[in-house]
Image 1 (spheres, one colour):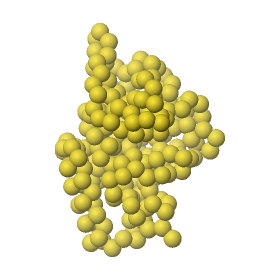
Image 2: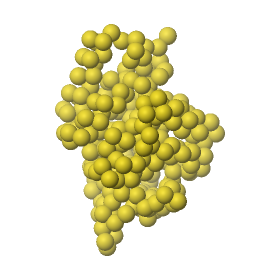
Image 3: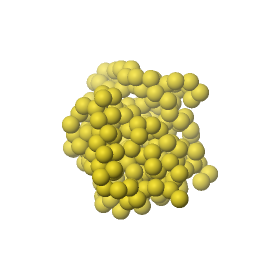
Image 4: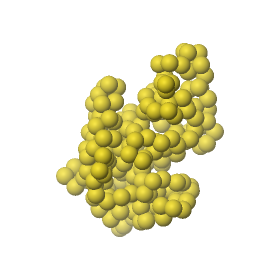
Length: 222
């Protein structure tokens, strides 16, 4: 039997969440809006398997379809680097559990999130409805191509590693827009890159080493 947030005594749950937020701050997540969003969105609701009792630890955890939910500090640092404003439209590539999109929904006007696995999109969509996160649109699609019909985007976040920042995603970024993407070989430590589109091209800033599942073309089989 797994343990969800509703199974944990209130005092212990409050203590876990306090430690959770302290861990975020100690690892460099200092933006007040990001911290508020991460306090409001309960990670425990997005980890519903044998790992549920570890939802408030700063570690990645397995989810369905061979994917992972990223460790909270990485979610926080990627969101912070994205510098989302309340009027922004954001594209997330890699819905996964839906946790990152839920955080973004607290910061942006509209969030489009795409994943190659129908099961993940369906389950995340159900959670979004339960939480009344009406500004998220989950879509089953090949995220490596972005969403041309909804482009351009103010912000793009990629939660799977590409060998290089994908060209289609770069072209769907507005001038002045920001993309955060892990770059590198899937079997090695990757670098988290912040890309800013300028009037003359793109500026690249390396933020930190990370490890993500690879960005794969095509739709998944589940």
